[in-house]
Length: 343
Image (cartoon, rainbow, N blue to C red; front, side, top):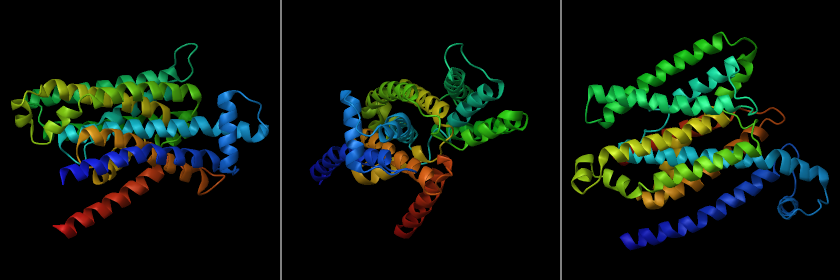
């Protein structure tokens, strides 16, 4: 039975990249101006090989506007999902995520401060948002862990999550206060807070790619330890796992990923919660398989959500966070009903 499940999970891992690629091509082709899939592939191939484009208008739409947006959506989805799956495995809590731990709220607070007061680094547009978002994500995690250690030196899961929820409420209150006095920036801040890929660009995609690659590799390097956490921290400690080191590594890597994502796309909820659950149903709980699966699953999920956000009421664009929240709420309601019905 175990071999069959492992073989099935391996087949899924082979299928996931293909599904992600197909969804990416569809997301690039579909929009306010639909471009045939074959034409989209031709434009991308010509751009990759630096050949002349037979249709300059289609090439401009695809290469300049849609490609960076779809790449950013895929990378944000991948980063949030692998971070959420790692936190859930670490804390053994199906609702553990950057949102419930207060990291997303901390990152949002830093980004809103940068937007409201125009904080930036000379010569690097939007750098202030990125730097403050990452800084406040890590600082929020540091504050939560410090308080948790003062209250419970063993850093138990329940203490961390409870303090994370409290800190999230505090950070959200400060963000609301800043928005009240934001003046002319209030519209852009409000739209950004609901999540948006409108500011996507190739430099943003490059930064996201580097952060996702480095952070993803760090988290995947903890896959064996995360499997050990599934049977309890005490058991993990008895088989030689450095519980405190793994906990700090996973939380800090996840916080940096969340900070980068929030700085690029605003607050997008439910991605780090929904995708790990979906992938766990398909490939099982083994983190050596689950973490790569969540990368592709998260990328696919957010590309589809972004596609819906910019096409369902075209030419008006919905905040992507609204779409993911609708999907996440319906998914968890169905999951709760199914779980209750079974047991």
